[in-house]
Image (cartoon, rainbow, N blue to C red):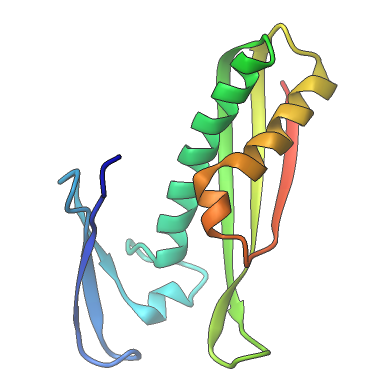
Length: 146
């Protein structure tokens, strides 16, 4: 399996500095990052590690869920997956930590009822490689058919 690479160039201190994250493997873009905007409610056109984790988690989860639905005899017509990644204070160790992730999924699926869809959604949460990588974080799930 391939290895994917991203690179960050950072200048300055945490509070006054800024950087750029380059998605090196895909070459699809370079994005600005800064800690003040990371910690603010309005990102102001910059991304953050949490947003990048959310993107990785939502896309990985959608792929995993589509595979599990097919294994269960269903056919996914569409899946709408959102991952909300929250940054908060790390009370145990100081600094900051990812304090939680919420995955919300709504699907249009042929061949599965609501209960089977929710069961598949829970299995995808457990089996998604990104979920596995984030085992130290509480991941909650809100799943339902449209």
